Length: 367
Image 1 (tube, one colour):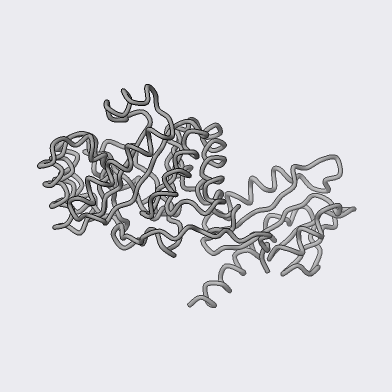
Image 2 (cartoon, helix red, strand yellow; image 1 turned 180 degrees about the vertical axis):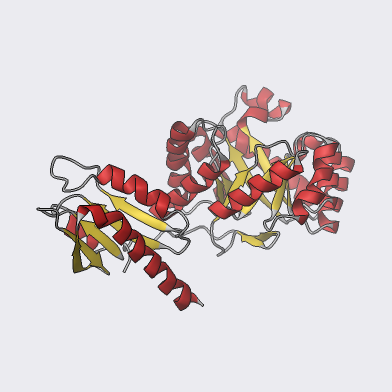
């Protein structure tokens, strides 16, 4: 029993590439990305953060390589993590070559900013020789001078033209193992650019609202922008960019995907905002359950509703449900059917026990 979607999203079919062992594009699962914010040269801290990001559910992790010491440090980092690493490169072509030789699974570059054709050829040769894909990363904040002179300011047309120009650079060198992004901090600019690019490009698209802001602000902007595009079938891999712990980026990315029924991981809690009708403290209960159930990886739907107005209806659509009742008598539902009653002081323990039991059942079933 799980929430049944009213509408299935038909994704645009794009070319499929590989970022390490992760497939991106085509019919592959929409992947979740994040990025480290440690000093790359501090390999111990960077490895530690990557492992935490992966534990949160990231499929791909990006690491910045601003200097030679950082790009060479990738070799040690990559040897101690179990996730494809994208090397974030800006301007200097030698950093890209060093990163590819150090074992990066992907290079995030803007070919138009790398320099001469000879330099681009050297980067692409290093990528080919080391089985390394590329992300053509177009950003409203770092458009080529010629594009800005033509359009006067960042706009959807400018981002798309920059993307097409950079795509041609790679295609002319017979390099096709790449994905593309056209990001801005403006939701309208970003979504218009991706829609326009999607019409003329069948390479995988990496979605994101860049420099979206703090945890709350950035999550809202990213949910609107990324969510709209995903609903239209656009997008093959996503990153939620937040001025916050990278783990929060992964959490919000999964919430976006879960809300659109595109990917499921962990417990999806459906809960009411609470009101005077609540028969137990809903908000506190949900906050505690989120923490106590954060280790669950299997997709499980759980409804926590404070009263009988919407409780039974929501419980009928979830695998495990709790509806508040009178006189400290609350109803537990299993697979949408009333099962047994539970007292307020036992709610947390009972729900955790039921969810963990369901998780074990799913593990055995999948194995």
